[in-house]
Image (tube, rainbow, N blue to C red; front, side, top):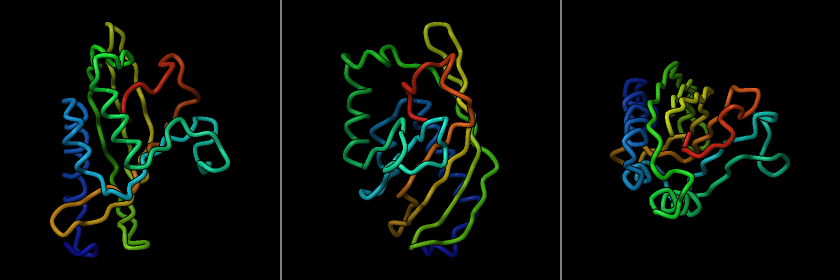
Length: 162
């Protein structure tokens, strides 16, 4: 799969699969969407464009840390998500911005509705993504979720993958 030949429809299908795997708690399969060199980042709401070296990030995982995060979500002791939240993700406004450093640069908007213990919360924001091809499928090399919220209240924490 040549990066220049990738269509927006292919990227939208990839992102729909990403959302579906997360919404159905197929987290091990979801990890398969990542390159071993990938980073998953969620900057703080007060510094959404900050870099992880100089500003607080809610999440800044390399692939190894992301695998550990998924393992914790699936453990009975991972009480933050036991029982699992019910989520529904909407991903839209997908734009392809060309290739940089061998990766396709993509942005998209998201809305995640999460229901837990009878309470529904919403996360809204944008994804800044870098995708590579392993020859057959797309893979995340960067998955950055920038929350467009003044803070995490009333949600309180990011107990799910955004």
